[in-house]
Figure 1: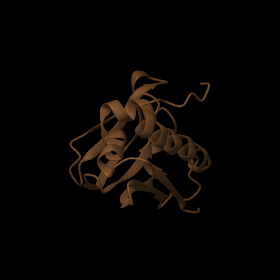
Figure 2 (figure 1 turned 120 degrees about the vertical axis):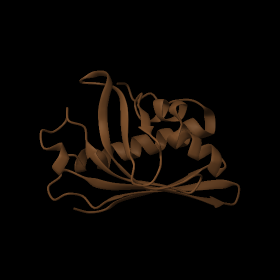
Figure 3 (figure 1 turned 30 degrees about the horizontal axis):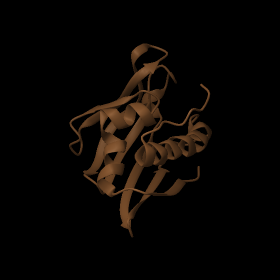
Figure 4 (figure 1 turned 135 degrees about the horizontal axis):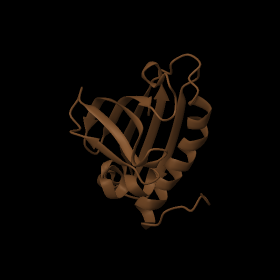
Length: 150
């Protein structure tokens, strides 16, 4: 499978973009009502938890933190939640968010790679990352959430 790579320029400082990426207030707006449950220490576990098939505490993705450098890098290995695929433990990919200052704005790069062969969520991720990243940009710049009609 191909690596997914996206680059966005956001009219905000890295600290503001970082807050949107990891704070409960930011992730609720940009990751469909989810928050990240984690200590955010390398090698510790994490889970994006929010409304879904199993109620308000549905685990959408979970895994292990690989890197967490505030305002710079957030990387993790992820698995889809158990409500998505029976073999969720066998399915994984790596997600890496990188923030860089460019002038007075921030370049947000997302790389989603190291996909398990024939991962059933690949095409879904390929489409949904555009929406999530557009929402991160909009929320950080304006405070408003994009309405995708869902």
